Structures are given as C-alpha cells and as structure tokens.
Image 1: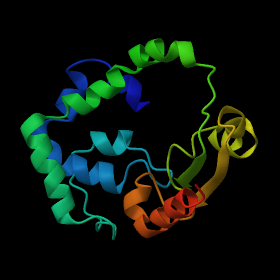
Image 2: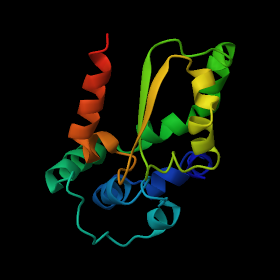
Image 3: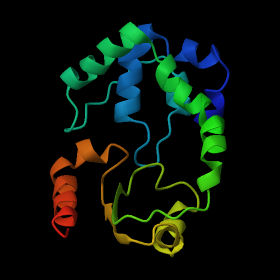
Amino acid sequence: MHMVHLQEPGVAEKQFAPAHAKRLMRQLLCHCFSHGVFCDEEMDDNKFPTSPLPPWLTEADIDYFVTSFEKTGFTGAINYYRNLDKNCELAAPWADAKLQVPTKYIVGDGDITYNFEGIQEYIHDGGFKEDVPLLDEVVVIPGAGHFIRQERAQNVSDHIYDFIIKF
C-alpha cells in the first residue's frame, strides 16, 4: 500500500524527486486512483506516460503542478501520509462521533477508494447512513474516477446546487 511505502523518509523522496515532476504528475492525474488502477507499478516505471490526456486535463494544468512541485518538492504532500498515525491519535476522542450535518455524498464509480474492499457495502448497505444520520443521498457517477470535480464538473456542480437549495 502506498501509505506504508511513503513512511520511510528519503525513500519516497527519491521516487518523487522534483526532477521527475512532469512524469509523476501525468501518472498521478491520468492513471492513478481511477478505474481500478493503482500506481505502485506505474510509479516505479521511469517511462514517460504516452497516453493522451483525459478531456478534463490540459498540459497547462499539468505544467502548473509541475512548476509548483519543481520548486517545493513532494515532501509536504508525502508528509500527509506520514502523519496519519498522529492524526488518528488526535482524532481518537471523536472516533464514535456521528456526522450530524446534512450530507450528500458524490463519488465516481471508478474512484479507487470507492472500490476498496468493503467500501461499497459500507456506503450502500447502511453503515454509512449509521455514521452520517443526516445523509440525504449517495450519488455514484458512472465513468468518473477519483478527480470527480474535474472529470464531471457540471454534473457535480448540479448535484451540489440541488442539495444546497433545499436549505
């Protein structure tokens, strides 16, 4: 799992070196986290992705991220995963808390997190509703992946608008 791989300082920094930012951003944004594809094998592959960009992503978008990561490196982003244990420790007092606000959950059917073992059952068979009592609706958008706000911008905006106008 990528979260374990990223724990050891220095290991991930070599793989995510700023010099590789263009290749990494194309791999992360185009191939990872969507439609059952996970990147461990791809991220170890130094070949530059040759597949065309999806319609929701431009070279200018990638260049923006590349410029940022070439300046700062990826350590800040990697540290999010390194801090997961501490975040869990700090959040422990609220481990059994229910989310008590009106909620609409929108996910792409190709989002890798939606396809983790047991997640769909949790979401659709009552576990999610138990933890989020004011869950209004679960929307699964066919053909969308992890970057759903970019992939299906108008569809997501419409769902958010329809939810907000109820209040």
